[in-house]
Image 1: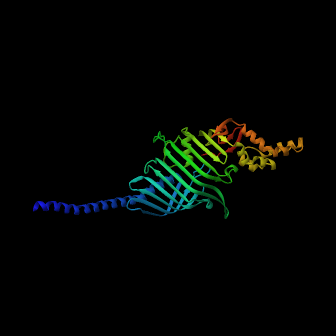
Image 2 (image 1 turned 120 degrees about the horizontal axis):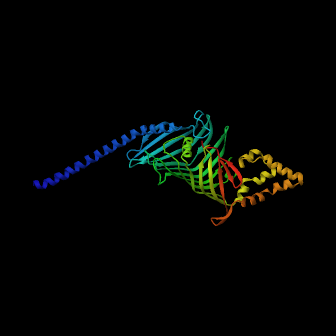
Length: 396
């Protein structure tokens, strides 16, 4: 009889023991979750201090932690970002650029703690000198970063239906539009802690930029991939300081692939850019472009010549070229042979297109006739063949 009862007692013991084990596991897991949640404020404050030392101050009006039992969800309402000394022209004593954002939600899974995913709620209002400057909106914005709390391994930032409007008094005007913007970054396989190398990729779908250059006002698609060397570490720093370190180390921006398409105009580019002691870009890109004649028409240079060229317009389209020189040449043609200057103006488009198409060498791009030529950066000045077409501000 006792032999029969002993197995029954063991089975009953197991039935009572398993719930006890389950309760202990649940209590331990609950304790672990609340311990991790208690560390959120501490880790956020450490991160804020590091970023503030680099001139980037982040504040949160109301922070809460949720997500029990398998996630940590940190929600921040009333986000304020203040940027100081992040460009060559912005000193530490100037009024910072600020951005006000409604909400950020950061999520970490308990079983993948080194991966953080963030979602951003639109809109964001950017201010300069205490006055609204731009308003930014999107239908969806999110980011992810891996490798924390140590040195990040990779990061991604995605915006869908991005819009950026510029304020002029109480009115606003469109500045930037894009169906989708994707920015990726990761440490390269050959990267080391003392000499990190970063691989980046930027993709823009149906992007437009107003009030910068007529060529950018029509929708374009971009896919740019690059590699950045010359870094000494990945700790937070002001961008001018970071660029100085890259220059001192002889670092380079290697454009491994760049494809831009705008209608029938397609351009591919590869090359390498460095930074001079004055903080200017210096180097060369090898360009292959289809539809250069259409690019001339998109710039509207022929129409400008017909009506005379204001200096402010030339400063925007061809820095360094003087309107007085252009108009004097055309006026001299009129004086020599009446009507010749006006004829030159009206037929400038064909001449300019022929001149542009004579630059570089014949090539084929995606099955279409193209021209291959170098795009040179000389101490910040950008040269398209012999023409100086832009001036890039110094990086520090």
